[in-house]
Structure formats: C-alpha cells, structure tokens
Amino acid sequence: MASIRTRKGSQLLFVDFVYRNQRCRETTNLTDTPANRKKLAKVIEKMEAEILLGTFDYRTYFPKSDKVAYFDEIRARQEHLYQSHVQGTPLFADFVTLWLHEKQIEWRASYQQKIGIILDKYLIPAFGKECLSLIKRQDVLAFRASLAKVTHKTAKHTLSATRINSIMATLYMILKEASKRYHFDDPTVDIKQLKADKPEIVPFSLDEVWQFLNGVRADYKNYYLVRFFTGMRTSEIDGLTWDCVDFDRREIHIRQAIVNGVLGKPKTAESNRQIDMSPFVYDALQAQYLIYQANKKQGKSTKHSHGFDYVFCLQNGEPLDYRNVNRRVWHPTLRRLGLKPRNAYQTRHTAATLWLSAGEAPEWIAKQMGHVNTMMLFKVYSRYVPNATRQDGSAFHALLIQSKQEQEGSSC
Image (tube, rainbow, N blue to C red; front, side, top):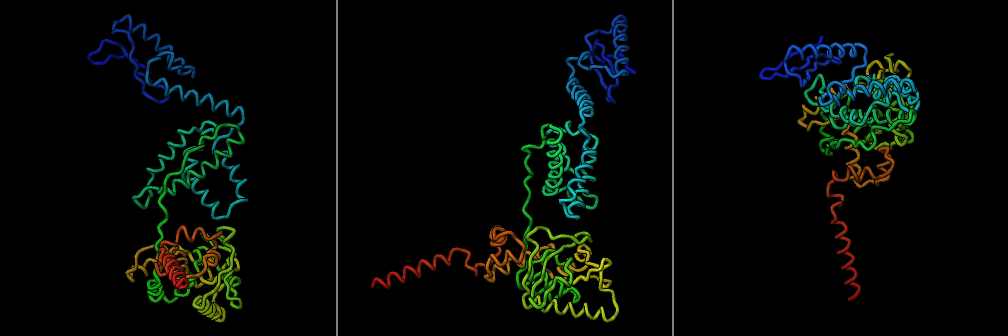
C-alpha cells in the first residue's frame, strides 16, 4: 500500500509505493500541509486502482522520473508479446522444439548431443519464455556478455571465447531461421564472433615418440603407435573395426567414428578415406590381430554388444572411453617420462609434422589426414618442420648460386 512521506531537510511530499514488484519513491511539488496530504491521498487512491486494473501509466503521473523509460519498455514488451501471440509468433522454447525436429536429419548423433547441451544449459534458460520477435540486439549482446562470467563447477576458469562462440552460433542459427519464417528483423546480424586463441599445437619430436612408445603400458603400445604414425583422430581409431583393416592392400579404411559411445559417420565427407600402413603400423596391427584371435580361441568376448569387432577395445569387447584412457594411460605416461603435458590429439599433429619433415608429398599427406586440400598443412603445420626440409629460403638461394655458376662456366 502506498504511503505519503517527507525526506529529512525537505518540506516536499513524496509517494512511496510498489509497482511491478519494484519499490518506487517519487517526489512531488507539494509542500507538507494537511491540505496537500489530503489532495495527494486522493491521487494515490486513483493510482492504486489503476495498478490493480493494469491500466496504470507511470509517465502520466511522473513524467520527469528516471523510471519512465524503464517501465515504458516493459509495457511495450508486453503489448508486443500479446500482438505476437495473436499473429502466431511462438516463444523461443516452442520454436526450438520444431527447429530441432527439422534439423536432426542433417546432423550426426554427436552434433545433436552437442546442440542439446547448449540449448538445455544456456539458451532455453535465457530465452525460453521470450517471444521470438521480442529478442533484440541488446538482449543478444547482454547474453553474450553474461556467458563470459560463467564458471565451471569443477574449475575456477570461465568459458573460453571458443566455447562462447559455439553457444552463440547456435543462437544465431535459431534466430536467423525464425526471422525468415515470422518476418522480423534478425537481431544477430553483424554481431561478430569473439576473437579466440588458436588451438595449441604441440607435436612430439621423433625422439619423444619413441620415448613414449617405449614407456607406455604394453597393452596400449600398439594403440598409440598406430595413432602416432597414421594421424587418425581419436574418434576414428576408437571406432576402428577389423572389417576396415585390409592387410592384403596394407590399408586402413576410415568409414566410421565413435563419439560418446555412439558409432556414426566420420567428422567430414573427406574423412572417409584410405590410410596407407607403414611397416611399423602394419606390424602393430598384426600383433593386435593375434591378440584378437587368441581372445576368440579362449572364448573371451571380442564383440561389442551391437556386434562390432573393435580393433582396440576393453577386455569385454566394448569400445574404449577416451576420457578414461586419457586419465589412466595418456597423462600418467607423460608425467612418468617427464614429457611436456599435452592432449592426445597431438598424436595427429605429430604424424603431419613427421611426414612433412620426411619430405613426403603434401598431397599424399592431406589425403592421409582427410583434408580437402594441402592448405591446412601449410597454414598450420609447416612452422613445426625443421629447417632440414629447406623451408627457410636457403634451397632457393642455393639454386640461384648453382645457376649463376653454370652460366659463368659456360661463358668462359
């Protein structure tokens, strides 16, 4: 209930009331007299009636108040929300349900899972109850700013710029599609991505590779040798089945990948490829095949519950869980050997840099890696190749010197 008060040191009356769950205190130009209090009481009575009926207009009573713009915005949003519902523009959460149903046919199971996490954890809580056409540019920017303050439960660090960009990209896809269907301006237009640090690439030297292979657990030596010398992604080697290993042609066929226990298509269309087995890889896979055959003879389970024979798997035939392998094998081995900490994906980077260093044809390397062309090699990996490959300009200088000497010799 509203009350009439005065501030210490002032004779002017002010109104103290609650509107839209906010306490408001507005000063009048009436001095503190019985007559003015009676007059103001009648005004308050009218205000309270209008607030109860939902017809109260803050600007009408307090046109000079700094709260006018705030309450005008709320009022406009409510009116727009009503009109939007009348015209058929849905709420964000309702549209997302439809959007997901339509998009699932385009996505791998792992990507669907990724989008689901982003929606459930970030987007639905923030925009779920908002009418799509009411989401403005400032709302999108404010949401992005709020993501920078989010911290993980198990760590003190905040979300990375890469993670924030990933979350925002999902929001952009949703609002872009909705704006086309319901004919409103896309509030995400021209909002740029945050500048993200490039992923750290820390390949192993050849000496470090052998040090690791000689120091890792015996039951994982074949696994990591194949990783280091083929450049296979974690999802590809963990999803590798024996029917994709061709010993006669000495090829590994990449036709599938496993992510979070779900076997599906590889990361990209180019990832469907044949990888040539080097002698070391051939021997490692032959040794692994002998283990597989021995387990079958002993009656041990060699098949996954869905009938797949994985090349590298647990004793019961189930596929490897890369998180568990990293925690129990990869990182402990690095620590024990005194090698620089890094993620297991560096085995792929290591293969690329070793091939380049050895002078293999870039086109062949790109094919082994599953790249569209050689651009990735020269953009990402070339700076890790030793000068022995003559990528420092000295080979061209030597060519000029030789040509000049031959020209001078022929002129004599």
